[in-house]
Image (cartoon, helix red, strand yellow):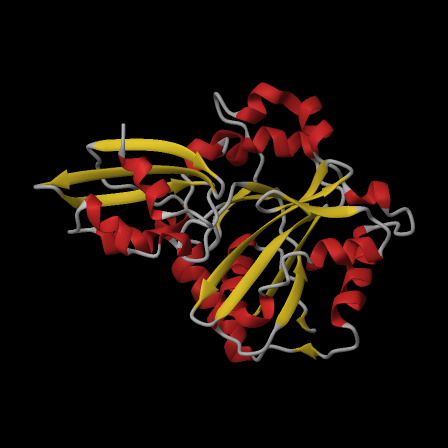
Length: 313
C-alpha cells in the first residue's frame, strides 16, 4: 500500500491531514503519525462532559476534535496513530488489517466489540471510520508506552467511569504494546516495522507544497477554531439518552406543531456519516418521518425502530 510520511505532532494539523487523506486524494494510502500530549474527542461528543478541561489547561495538553465518531482518547509521544484512506470498496475488509499486522510482529492481537483491538483481553487500540462520497477513512491508536496516569487524569470528569475506576483499574484494562515487542527498543523501531509490513515495497507519496498549504489552511479555518472544538447545542425542550450496539446516543430536540424545530445528537457512537447531517434532514419533519431515512448510515447497524426509542420516554 502507498504511504505518506507525516512528522508533524500538532493535533489540529493532523486532524486536517486526516481529512485531506479522506477527501483530497484518489488512491489508497496509509500514514503512521503522532500527536504531542493531547485529548482528541469524537465528532459528536461534548468536551466538558468527556474531558477534564482544567487538568488539560494546567498541564499544557491540547484539545482537538476529529471528524469521526467514538469516544475521547489521550495521545502522547508514547502512542502511534495510523490512518488508512481509499476507495470505500477497497477498505470494506480492512478493519482487521492492523490487528493482522500486529500478529505478524508476534502480538496476539484480536479485534473486539465495535472498535477495539485487544491483546489477551486488554485494549491496545481503538479505531473509528468515516465515509465521504466514494472514499472511506479508518484511523486509530496504537498504545506503545502511553502515560496511563496522565491518560486517566485527562479523561476523568466528575462522575465518569475513569474517576470511579482509578488508575489501577485502567492499567488492568489496557496494555502498552512494548510489553509484547521486546525486539524493539523504542517506538521508532516499532513504527519502522509497521511501515515495512503495510507498505510492502509500494512507494511513498510526497505531498506538494500547495497540498501542504491547503492542510494548514484547513487546520486554521476549521480544526483550531473554538466553534469546531467546543461547538454548541441548540436550546432543547426534550432530551434522552440510550445505549445501542453503535454506542451511546444522546438527543436534544424541540418540537413545534409536531415537527422538529431544532435537533442535535451527541455521544460516543460510531457511524459512516456525521450525525449533524441527519439532524439537518430532520428539521421541519415529524418524528414519524424517521422511518424514511437511512439511519444506519449515521449510527452503525441501528434500525429506524431502534432509533425511534430515543424519542420515547
